[in-house]
Every structure is written in C-alpha cells, then in structure tokens.
View (cartoon, rainbow, N blue to C red):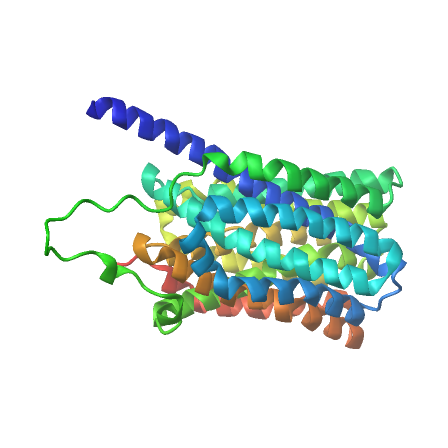
Length: 400
C-alpha cells in the first residue's frame, strides 16, 4: 500500500510540474505579446518617452494593488484557484488594451491596470506552487519554471515580430492572445498539487504547528525577507527595463527598424531563457550567492555594451549579456523567500511586493531620463541597480 501511495504521489507531482510550467509559460507569453507591440502603441497614441513611461506605470499600479493581498488570497483559496481566476482576468485585460489601441489612452491605461493586477497575483500564486513542487522533488528547479516564463516571452515576442512583419494590427493580434489565455489557462492548472501537506492527527492536548506560520504583516518586519525583496527589486528593474525599453532603445538610439528592434527584444528574452534553463546546474555547483554576483556583473557588462557600443551589432551582443545576467535574480529570490514552507506564502508576497516596486518606479524613471537625455542613455540607470544587487546578494543564502 505504501508503494502504491508513493506511486500516486509521484504521478501527482509530475502532473503538478507540468501544470506549473504551463502557468509560467502562459504568463510570459501574454506579457511579451503586449510588450512586443509597445512601439506601435507609442506611435499610435503619439506618446513621448516620458508619457509612455507614465502609461506603463499603470501596470505597476495594478500589480502593487494585488501583491500585498496575494499571500492571504493564496492561503485562503489555494494557488490553483487563484491562478485560474486571475489568468482569465489577465486575458480579458489584454482584450481591453487591444480595444484601447483604437479608442485612446484612457482605455489602454484601464486595461493595463487590470493587466498588472492579474499578473501580480498570478505571479505570487504560481511561485508558491513552484516552491511546493520543488520541495516535493527535492531539486532546485525554480529557475526552470522561470525559464518556462522566459520561453513564453520568447514565443510571444517572436509572434509579435511576425505580426509586425505581416502588418497585423495590434488590436487583432492582442484580441486573439487575450481570449486564448482566458480560455486555456484555467484548464491547464487543474493539476496543481495542494499547497500544504495535510496536518498529521495529534493526540488530545498535543501542541500544534500553527505557531510556525507567519502573517504577511509579520513578514514585513523580517530583515532577511526585506533584503531579499531589495535584491529581487534590483533584478526586476533590470528585467523590466529590458522588457519595456530594449526595443525602443534599439530603434531610437541605434536606428534599427521596428521589426529589428522587436527581434532585439526577443534576443534579450532568449538569453534569459537559456540562463534560467541551465540555472539549476549552476546553482548546484556554485551556490546561490557567488553565482548571483557573477550574473549581476554579467548584466552590468551587457548594459554598458548595449548603451556605449558604437553600432547595432555590438548593442545586440550587449542585449544578450544583459538578458543572460538578469536571468536568475527573480527566481532565486523567490526560492529564497520560500525556504521555509509554512512561511512561504507570506514571504513570497512580501518579496514580490517589494520587487514589483521596480515596475512602479522603473518605467517612469527610464522614460523621464529619456526625455532629459535619451532612452539609450537612460538605460545606464539599470547598471546602478545591478551594483546594488551585487551587494545584497548574500541575503539569499540558504538558512542553516
């Protein structure tokens, strides 16, 4: 009987792994589908870099509304139901954004607030599920789940480049993507495993384990959790700047076409995917702290080459190093926040909330600097963030 139960548990875990990959891939795909059309929205809506940065701020407003409550929501309803509902909302939000391409800035901004809200809560829930199956397997595979996210972003960016080349309107493109995500993801995540193991039966009067849990409010007072949040913030800023501004900087700063700028964005995402896929092997060999500091240095080198390179080919090399160096910061930060299973939802919620502040401050910061100098020069702010990330990387060390 024990062997049969173990077989069933292994099958459930494998199904949970597949469902978790599906959730990560889908959220990456829908995000990059939107991001690949940002230059078109900028031109259609006649936005300066600063105005575009403020519009992108709507995503962060939605995310930061969702994130503080995400830990409690996941604890109450479970990661499966949370992802199913928010994925449907995410798809509908992209439909609103698609219609806003024709209707104007207010509808686009409203859609992006909904988009950010759904993405933020979805992110916490799928990372909690990723930590659960990671513990079940006994393997540090969280970076591979985030590689799934990056794979989804690559697919979304390449599809976007194809849509640009075929002169498909952003409205038609995003309408189809949004409806597909809303319909398919709730079905794909049905195989999520339970977020917590059932409590063992105790003798009357025996102490319970509830005291080991921590509320989201208490997690906000933990120095290690806050430092991990700062670490994730620096890498989220680098990742978000690449998502939002890499193609615009290539087009405006290096004079590439829109199609080539979109392909540069896809290269950034491909480099992140490769880094995340091989991340578990590198983490097992070198450990968290040293590897993350090397990645921060690699990203910094790539950003400097991207900005200061005298021509577009060197900028593309910089894009590759930028994406590769940024790859592991967010997933390893989430794994570090979830090191203790009973405290994972609250801590992941706190770390994600801090990290997403990069999406609140990042787009307008780069946009305003772009108005003052240029978008390409503004990207140098990311190199400063990477230096801070290098300094606080030791906070991710595994607890004794």
